[in-house]
Length: 115
Image 1 (tube, helix red, strand yellow):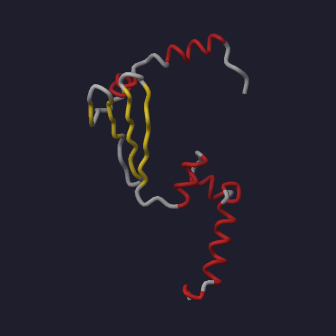
Image 2 (image 1 turned 135 degrees about the vertical axis):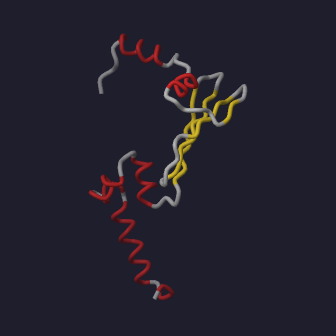
Image 3 (image 1 turned 180 degrees about the vertical axis):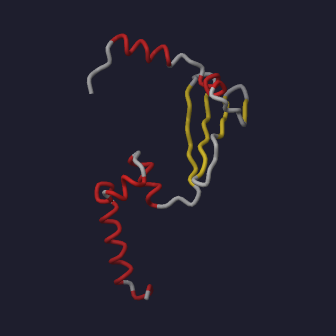
């Protein structure tokens, strides 16, 4: 990846001056909590979960927390590796899942309490 030109760096610096709360409101999101220090937005929840965006009003920084309802190993790997579930299923070994699967099956097969 080549370094950004000075124009590119200036463009990013200018974009980072945009007020995050104003930007979220411009996108149509309504805050769920507001005080002097933070503004909180709950993004559209669906069956997979929801994302909470907390913006520090003074620093103009955000923190994002995603809640996954009944998440499983694929959801965790998807978050860790920032890929889709389909990508993981296409090549589980790349994401460390093939060996985990084999090890877990060995435990189940060798554990007399599971029979």
